[in-house]
Length: 557
Figure 1 (cartoon, rainbow, N blue to C red):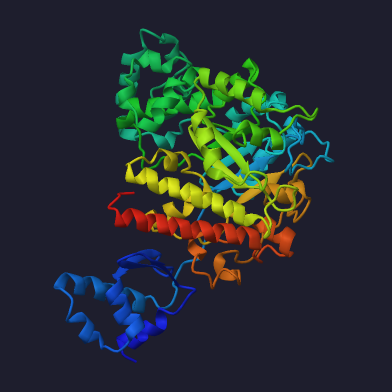
Figure 2 (spheres, rainbow, N blue to C red; figure 1 turned 180 degrees about the vertical axis):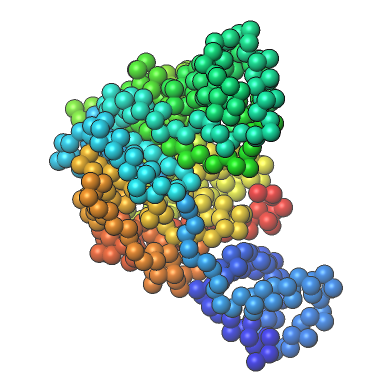
C-alpha cells in the first residue's frame, strides 16, 4: 500500500480524527497526537475526495515550504497510527475531604448531603483521620489537600473548625533538622545570628551550651515561632518570590501553623547560604480549605478564614437573584440571595479574595448570563458545574439541548471578546470545565481520566471512607473505615477502559463522565452516563472551534 492509499485508510478513523470545515481551510484534530492541523480545501479534496492523483502529482504543485509542512503532517499521521498514550494517572498527592457534619441552614433544590445522618464529627476523630491519612494511608504523598465541611455549611461548624486549625501546628513539618544545615558553615551561621539578634533578642542564645548543629537547630526553631521575625530582620518584600509575598504580608492574621511556615521561608531566604537545600526533604504540608454558602460573615468566621490563610474563599452562588433564589432557599423557605450579596461585600471589604461556585440547572441553562453576573459582583474566578443526575432540576436527554445552546452563546462571546483582545471572561472561567478542553489543547496535555478517583478520599464522622463526596452522601461504594481496613479501588479507570470512550475522538479532551453519575444512572462506574457525555463532547467541539478561530484570526492564546 502506498502512502496516499494508507493515508486515505487512516483518515477515515472517526475515533481518531475530527474535522472542522472552514471557508478556505479544513482543520483536523488528531486524538493520537492531540493536536490540530490544517489543509487547504484544494489539497484536502485532492487527497481524500478526488483520489485520482498520485502523491507525487500533488506534491509537485506545492512550494518547498508547503511540501515540508504537508509531508510532516503525513509522517505524523502514519507514524502514530497506533495510539501510544500512557494511561497511568501520575499524581502522588492526596486529596481528602473530612465531613464535620451534615448540618446546613439552606435547603437547596439539588442538595446531595445525607440529611438523615445526624452525626457530628469530634476533634478526636478528625485528628485521627488526619493522622491516618498522613501516616498510614499514604505517608509518601507529596502533598495533602484537606478540605472540611463539604457536606455542611462551614460557618455552622466553626467551633470544631477552629479546634482543627489549632491542631494543625502538630502536622506542619516546618522545623529545621540538623541535616538541613551545612556542617562547614555552622560557625559562620552562629556569627551571623549573633550579629542579627544579640541586641534585639539576647535570650535567644541563653540555652545553648555549645555552637554545634544541634544547638543551632534549637535556636532556628525558636525563631520559627517568633511572631515578629520579619520585623526583627528588617527584610524587604522584594527579596521573596511573588507567591510568598502575599503570605508574608498577611502573616499577622495567620494561626500558628501557617505563621510558622512563613517564618521558615523567611529564615531560608535570609540565611540561604548556610542551608543545604540539596538535602532538605520536601515538606508534606497539609492544606486547610473550606467552602461556604455565603450566609455568614461574622467577625468570628472572617477571623477563621484569615487565620487559615484561605485565599481565595469559595462561595456557592448560582448567579442572578432569580436563579439563586429559585435553587438556594433557607430551611425556613426564605430566599438567600440578599444575605449572600450583603456578606460578599463584607468579605471584600475585609480584603478576602472570593471565587464563585455556581450550579447549572435545567431551570436556568444560561452559563453566559450567570458568568457575567458573577464577574460583575467582583469575584476573582468563577466555576459553573452541571447539577448531578437524579434531582428535580437535573439535565436529561429531553432538556440538555438547552444547556448546549447556552454554551454556544458563551463561546460566541469568547470569540467576540478575542477579536477585541479581551480575555477577561475567559480568564474568569479559567478553572471551569467548560474551558478545560481549550487549556488541554494549548498545553498539548491529554486528560485520560475523569478525575483522580484513586487519590481522593472522603471521611465522615463515623470514620467511614469513600472515594467521592457523592458516594458518601448516598452511602454507596464504601471502601472501609479508618479504624479497621480500607481497600484501594483496583483496575484501570482511564478512557482506555471505558468502551464508549476508547472509540471517541474527544476522549482526551474529556476524560469520560463522572464515576458517580455512571454508577447511579448506568449501574457501573465505567459505563458512560449519556447526558454528561453529550455535554462534554459538545464542549470539546466548541473548544476546538474556538482554538481554530483564534488561529485563523492570528489571535495568540
